[in-house]
Image (cartoon, rainbow, N blue to C red):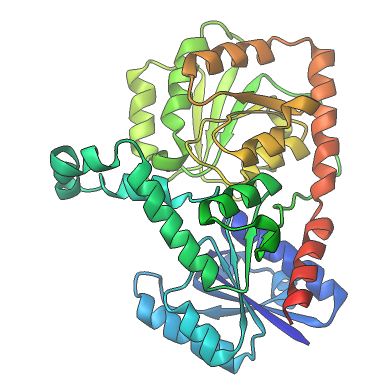
Length: 387
């Protein structure tokens, strides 16, 4: 029996947690594996009997108290006899010591673009009154061109890479970019490509409404939903039969609602957080992202699985891999030209219905290559190679 543990904060919650569930279900069906989830904020109400049957949930301290969190994870690794510990997004403090003392193999799953931390580093330098003052007086000169934040991100990522037995990225271009940033040969590294899965939709609805949809967390430093609102202000008069629907919430929610009012936006709807967004994807004709950074955005892959047309700024290789404009499965706009995005959005909305249908069907077909059992099998192969 191979025992695998995943570390999360909220569970179940977003994309990374959904992927853990897909892997757990697949491994449970295969037999020979036992899956554990170590989470600081488990949502007991969302844990169905089926989920409890495929994974074991353990509560750990919040990441706000890193020493207690690391100590409890180490205790659980020993108590649960864990063979492989998977850390989505970023490494647990002190993981190298845990790895040495327990003998478990460690996997770091990078769910963002390579060196995504550079965006967070710059953002955090401006968060809060004191930091904003320091930003304008001192840090803006140091961080404005992005080179310092990139160097810090590379150093952090390389340290995490050295402290794990396997480092996963979301597409082949990310492997090349990561290895190049580390100054190593990608084929001689322990960097593995494992994409995010997408469950095929059994009854895709191709009869769409004139709805443009955003679905995700309202976190403006990464998602940059303010761009989408400005773009809508440019096109709303040109698309009189269309509406913009935003599903989600988060720290930027109040600011975005105020911005919508200031821009006098029409036919816009803030729907709030929804546990099940399938109904929105069934209705939406176009799904838009205007993000600063994305790894493998599930909003786009879910959109494709439901037959929606995806649009996004080409800020990362992962976005281009999903939308694959050469196969006409979506539309990628050079970052971050809001005027060009607005023009492209009008053009896509105005396409003949038969052309839209062709794009929708190609998108659905492309998602079949990323079915959960296909991606989970890649994880199983990785786990088997480690033990």
